[in-house]
Image 1: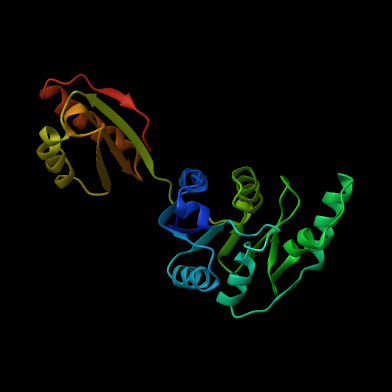
Image 2: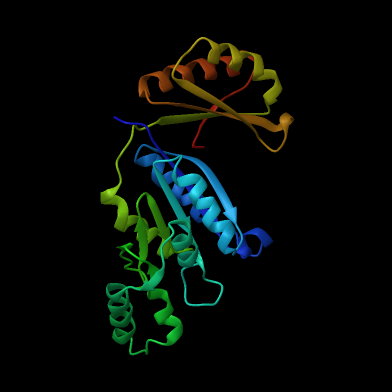
Amino acid sequence: MPSISAAMVAIGDELLSGRTRDANIHHLSGWLTERGIRLVEVRIIEDDLGAIAAAVNALRTRFDYVFTSGGIGPTHDDITYEAIARAFDRPCTPHPEAMALITTWYEAKGQAVTPERARMALMPEGATLIHNTASGAPGVQLDNVFVLAGVPRIFQAMLTAIDPVLTRGVRRYSKAVTAHGLPESKLARQLADIQAALNGVSIGSYPIDGDEWGVTVVVRSESEMLVNQVIVSVRAAMQALGADPVDGDRK
């Protein structure tokens, strides 16, 4: 199976100011991992046309897929579609099918399609719609770029819609083991020795609230057998240092 890579552009001044804590990065990383797609890079970008367009153009030539989140709603600062159009050197034009979907959604709720709501149908010319069962207004796809909403439940609904079109890659397996009370620094040499003796496996070491409180070790590989083998070695190294390791769940 191929190795598939992805990047993400999370858009919004509220993410950079600390007003909003982004949940989409966390969800996307796990969702892609399940499909054998590696999320390699994430950029958080302010609501600026040039910055968004530049980030998308920098990433779409380097990765198999690029996902954006945020900035496709009905307000004045929702400028992502315009920025994507700039990145692809296309105009933003009314999308008839998107307008029909938006109209149907609001009419079913007994609400009018205001000019602000109609603005959500102004999309890069030639874009393919990403259907949205959560709130009606669709996202779009242009080439390998998927433009998704920022609201987490809508973001996730759009991921479900594009799931069938994504190429799966090689799945990576992972297991974790934690030793409370064992300083990470005491285990460093043993982990380096285990890592040096093996190919095709990565070992991550993560201290618990500082070096002295304990450590979680995560083993990742495309081989489930190799992951299991290395976890046994890591657990044995922890026990040799007097720790009582327990299985963890860090991805």
